[in-house]
Amino acid sequence: MDRLLDRVLLPVASQADAEATAAAIDGYDIGETVAVHVVEKAGGAPDKASVQQREEAAIEVFRVLREALDRPIETEIRYGTDVAEAIFEAAHEIGASSIVVTPRGGSRWIRLLTGDVALSLVTETDLPVVVLPDVDREGDTEEVVDDE
Image: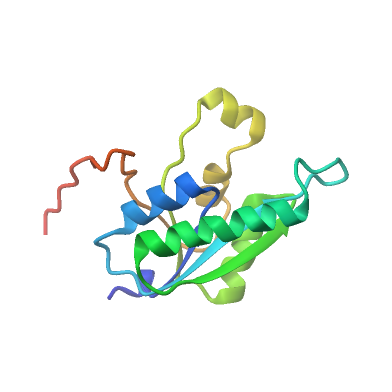
């Protein structure tokens, strides 16, 4: 196994994201996996949902991911006003060899308004970020050619 994938941090945002992420990493030789869900805090403004509701949602996200991967994974719930920063902190604290992500949908307009966590993940980190091809919800993938 390549050291890049020895101990990966796998950010997951929702149940659909957990399913898509599990499908994307299927077939890759990934070592220890730590999934992280960040509960975004409003930073002085009222939160959209209670902490308890968000923690329950995170637990469900982890359940979906575990079932889809069918192997042991560690899980962590993090809290912060900056999702990317919380992911970076988690990656360093667990000794991740890389952060593994799959592309998430959303229009450019939505990303402009809400901030693009994916862009921050690949441009503001000192750790390798592995972006796996997105697997479409019907199970089809784009063909990846391996020239080895």
